[in-house]
Each structure stands twice: as C-alpha cells, then as structure tokens.
Image 1 (cartoon, rainbow, N blue to C red):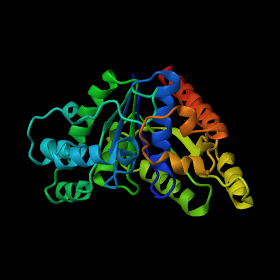
Image 2 (cartoon, helix red, strand yellow; image 1 turned 135 degrees about the vertical axis):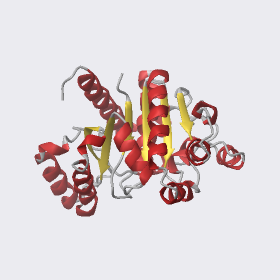
Image 3 (cartoon, rainbow, N blue to C red; image 1 turned 90 degrees about the vertical axis):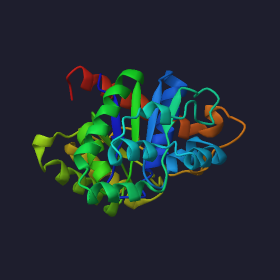
Image 4 (tube, rainbow, N blue to C red; image 1 turned 180 degrees about the horizontal axis):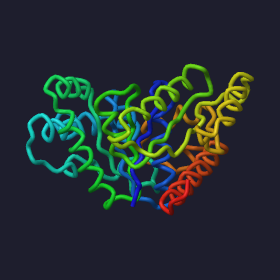
Length: 281
C-alpha cells in the first residue's frame, strides 16, 4: 500500500506545517485514520502544534525525538527501532486520538551537517527507506513535514516516500519554489522520486485580486495538478497552531467554512490516493 506523503515546497512560509496539522486532524477526526506525522523540520513547528510545550521539551531533553533516532541509526550506526521514539495520541482535538508523532528538535540542522561531512548520505537514505517500509504497514497514512529547501534529509524523503504534496501561496515567490522542485525531480531519475499528488493553494487572501490571478494561473498549468479546494488565510487557522488544554472539538478548532474547506480537501486527497493505488493518475 502506498500511503507515505512528504509535504514539500522549496520555498518556506507557505503554511506547510499548519496544513500537515489540519490534514492529520481531519483524517483522524472525520475518517478514523491512524496517522503518523513525522516532523522533519528543525523548527519543530508541527511538534509544537501537536504536543503540550512541557511534553515536547521533556521528549527533547530525554533524547526521544526523531533526530535522536537518526543520530543512533545513521551517525552511530547502532541498531535501533524508530517506534520507541514515537509519541502516541497527540493532538488537542478530543476525537482525533489516532495521531502519532515523531517529534523534531533544533539540532536536526547539526545532524544533517554531520551526515554531509562524514559522507553518510547512503546510510541516511537507507534509514529513511526502512522506516517508511515499516510505517506503511502500521498506519493508514504517513505525513512528513519536510523543511523548505533541498537538504540531504529532504532529498531522502523525496526519493523514498510514495508521494509528495506541495502547498503554495498564490504569489510569485512561492510558485518559484514549485518550479525549483520540478526541476530537481528531473535530475538523476534512476534514483527514484515520489509521485506528485498535486498542489494545494494555501493561505489565499480571498479579497486580494493578485491572489486570484495567481490562483488562476496555477490552475491553468496541468503539471501542477491543483486540488480543487483552496485554503484561505483566516484567523481560525492561525489560532489552530496553538496547542490548547483541555481538549476541544474539531469544530471549535476549525469553525465554519474553515472546517468545511479542510474536510473537502481531505476527501479529495483520499480520492487521489485511491486512484493512484488503482493505477490511475
């Protein structure tokens, strides 16, 4: 079953982590999916969104993050299971308890530097490939929050994951990130590459003419495979990034049109996955 998705745009600031959060919680809340979120960004944004601050800091202090797993598996080459680094039942939505997380930490950047210095790229890709091979059988979906740019770790996800999904703001600089990613995909085709699931138009200002014009341009290009549902930049999504206690309902976190848009996007995502599994594009 192909169910691993890296969420990627070479440009930062496109709302990638917030989209991963919203997709994971909608998949769990509405569809009962068991979801693994892998935080592969040194900023650990989605980890902060899915966990209480004190719990995340505790995991980081105890060396129980995704980065610590990579250090053991790649730099130390010590046999270690990634599942012991997973935090189960994250999210502050009361009916979205089927989300697990491999949290990140700021020293991910230092890890990647050491990988490059010691020529461990092959070991890194093997570790990522093995992790995803096992995770495919344990979860309905795996969502990877990749850092912007093309680091050695991000390239490993793009080579080893089944699919990639690209959120973009409808503006010139963000769409340049899509072009850069498309050009990178053409390099070294023998090394494999994730299949493009499509582009999500994200953080759209519904009142800006420029946003509407860029959205129209994006939708004209078949190669982008734009999702039908765009996600607007609204206060509710900004508020959703802050972990709340006690737990709240889905509709309290994503009220009104925001929740409806996320549900439509998630349904479309599942439809595209089903078509890809059946051999259609």
